[in-house]
Length: 326
Ligand code: ACO
Image (cartoon, rainbow, N blue to C red; front, side, top):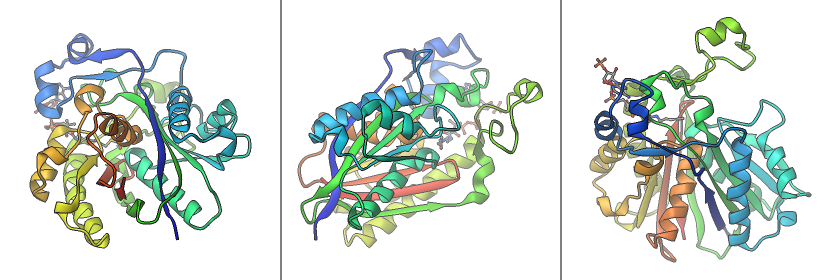
């Protein structure tokens, strides 16, 4: 009766940095507005000619090495993304081929910023049931490609990056202790890319109206996020048979420092236990949580046997949380 957990992790961030000061030259905004309203100082932008799969592959190579698992021993490549290379084939198939995961099945998972947590729960199910042994879960987002760079309300918020993990059996009592995923499709209108799918194929009129770019009602998403972090944290901690004091590190989705601050105030959790790196990278959608987890580990903020709480929220609307014992 073994556990299921992360046995290797890696991340990739494009080299190109876009600062708030540079954004001041692109749209009517200021470093002061962006910093005080979001906490973001800079973000990474994927080089032209590269796609989400490029970052996924780079992050995955590091995760496989860290896990000491051969690509040929991966049973499933699962890619969480809202910015796939193409509508079809899945980005997972591109990653599978490039990495030579030659016996793996591959598919993409669409849950916006909650994608990594959704992916963890899918991987957990496949391994716990004995169907698969090793799963490569990658969250990769080229948000710069779906952002309207003339819309100051959204373009200052997002960045590009990828985080990957290898999920396998771990000793009993370790790994994923609990997860919870949820959705409220009635909130779909608050965060969407209206065109480019089967409902509204792209034509010249659509391009003129800029409907192929991300649209967001920031205020609605903000309220939803603060409420959900609080609700879901309390729920999942109780379901795990733990108390808030048992949590050693909370890694929330990295959307806005004000969302994180409001949530930890509501939760009454000490700030030292919360990891945030959005100042450097902005909101990288599904990739934010695994990249933050990777950095927290490398900065020695997470030690053996620590209890970690991951919480994601975003487009859909969707949310997800997981409690892990490291
Ligand atoms: N620079 C300067 N001014 C701006 C900018 C900008 N970049 N953007 C908006 N403003 C202006 C607005 O036009 C508005 O002006 P007005 O009062 O004259 O109309 C004013 O600033 C205030 O705008 P608000 O939208 O009320 O600002 P708010 O404090 O709500 O912050 C923000 C906006 C940062 C978007 C916030 O609502 C937020 O973070 N929302 C959550 C977003 C989020 O978490 N998304 C995660 C999901 S992501 C996913 O799933 C992919």
